Length: 399
Image (tube, rainbow, N blue to C red; front, side, top):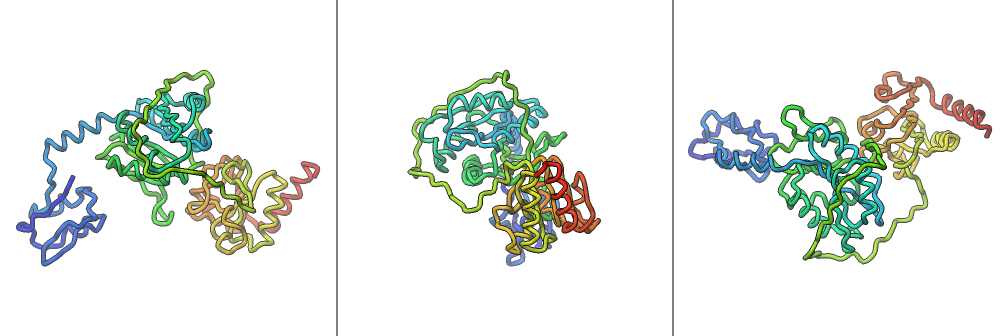
């Protein structure tokens, strides 16, 4: 919906400048004009008393656009695969997609590229009504060019109202390209998804401004509504071995990749820590005081059969490697038990672990924000509590 300013009517009063959330209106030679940052949100249309700001979209165009939006119905999940096997985030997206589709009264579709029919059947058992399967060998190894082309083709043909993908390295790499091809919006790194009860639009919720606020983003005028979702923040749906669905083979004739993937090389690290799959995580923040405190947490983690995590504060101090970081700029985790030791509970950390089944917080400050999300809270000195806890666990286990 392009916005223009009629210079003959503009008096240069500057009223419209503050109305634009994108700083897209500037004053030049005593007249207001729209710059390249305009997002066509129309917030400025009602503020000009002279009627100088107008929309160039006609009533017929508005009606046509609304009719086009009504053509989009279902929820589509991009089911990511690695080496022919479904990635864990695919199951999480199916759980979220199933919930949204049921609320909207529509179907749940899954797009699977580069895998076989057995993996497609798994998607059905995890909640998909239809699986759009493309098993062409060219899709076995991830390639931005061909993945973008194929997924855009699927979306144009099946017209889903909502498209979800994982905020993984693969999703972050090519989903923005798909959104650009479709000329629609995309919200990255969502931590929550809801349906607006009045408009039925997708409410895409994610941390913003360094995690200091949670922003709710909408895409009311274009379809599909696209979002990438952080791994481990959504719960998996229910698995039903007897569930049936439709598998549709998608043809990808005349693909024109600009690049070719010759080989994929896995990174090998001296330190191996799989926070994503851990059932028990013992994390430390600035309160652990140093490497001695980290070793104390390691002893507790080993006794519990878990792994060590950390807040950004502990990482920045150099007490523990980055691969252990939990939070907005680290990893999002969802263990059965998360023990937060000496972590105050900044929102940047909370968004990475607050979906844990059980959260145990140990902090000497009773006002620490971490206690607001904790299942159990212990107010006290972690250097006294953690060794006692480790000793008791070892006694119980007889180690």
